[in-house]
Image (cartoon, rainbow, N blue to C red):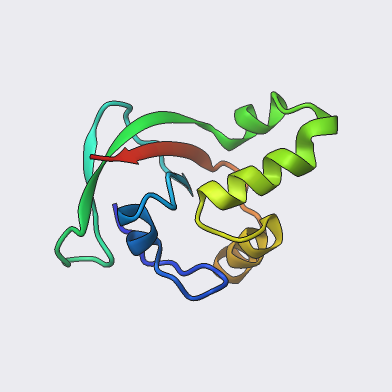
Length: 113
């Protein structure tokens, strides 16, 4: 999988994975659970490490299970797991890339192996 995005501090996602500061991503295509993927900084580049896909659900399904009273806390936790300082920083990245928070994403959990 290619992880070439940067967080608010300019840290590369692929580097954050290697130091266990990122273990979650949202993508437009699902990933099969149990598969090991390379963590690459760009297309055709060597892997920095490998990751094991441990969970994959639609983003809509995930959010539908979060209680309204817990929403703010869960959004901040999700942002941190994605390697961002805040939910606002993650939202800004989505807006810059897609023009808005996209519909139809998959929430993919992984761990470094």
